[in-house]
Figure 1 (tube, helix red, strand yellow):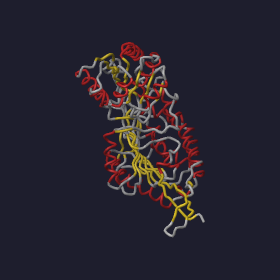
Figure 2 (cartoon, helix red, strand yellow):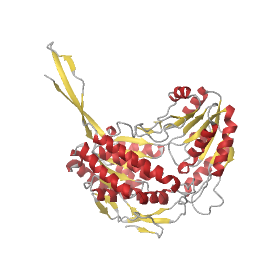
Figure 3 (cartoon, helix red, strand yellow):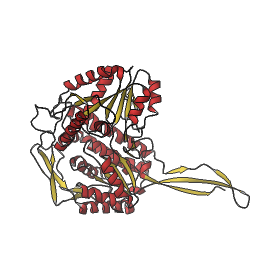
Length: 499
């Protein structure tokens, strides 16, 4: 069951979890809090392992006996286009949920949390429509034991892996839900989606959309709940693959849980990405982007550049510019179009940020601005955009992911030192270089141990053609890219005599 407050947005009400094409009532409900007001948006269905079991059973049956994996890629692309069209018609309702349960300011919610993932949806449909399930092997001429030559040929068959468990985070729920669910479905897999317990509504909404789009029962299932549900979906032997986005600590647990049944695992985890500002950089441009990286989604983004490595000659000027920008950014109600910085997801996230700042100051860092909860906001999980200077690379705040609006500025003397500092991290998800010399930046980018590096802002957005993922503790595998569907498939080589 689900009950709501008077302020609940449309499409926030669901009678249960979504299993086998219908709603399955749960024994419990849990409040979904608005992080800006600390009030309950809705009491949403709270799933249990029994619900996860039912969802896996439905997904297994839909894969083994249903029509979905047997469809041609073009047929699946048509079905997914219907799902896309349903979601497109619900755009305003989805954006309202993003603001209400994730606290993302409405000023950025539409472009970043609806328009961007829907463009990816279109890309997935396009890749599905042209997906080749049979790929020709080169012709071979091999000598046999009798001394004659065998003319050989063959194909590689790409088949869907099976049942996929998709476990998603709170910071960009609708975005990441689509990022995982759509390519899995496009490849012919069936899916059980488990969202963060903080943001279940943008996942349950996909169940309603799947019903309206006419997806076959069991193809997409959505189960809410806690750690016990996540563990079930990572360990059940009927699940063939787990795709997870979240912290590196939880990702390691998911990998360990999945290892007992040797599941295929894709992990998109944390980051402590470096933004390198060379002495010849356009400081106004770099500072504007640097301030944005510290405050977008209130710093709750795995790929945000939170380590700013700045050449000694422009270090003070850069700090001055970033601090001035941060001082002017409106912090407050995410439903207000003027707001740029919204709340963190929960109070413990504010406490976590405060502890990192206090620890950094104890280790010798200088607080430039922020470092407190905004005094003008009596409610909500807010923390002021914070900038720390005189930070060393070995400080805790420079090594661990804060997941809040806290940035550190570190000096460097030359390009080699900048690359060394950038690579001095357990993570390697993203990064950038700002300079008037793109050729030098390109050479530096090749040496940085990171899955993604942009030069002077890159392409201006998230290119679906670029694989996304990280080195080291930032994850295993990649999402997006031209071969985005391949990871959800198994390969089989079928070889034969050509003559």
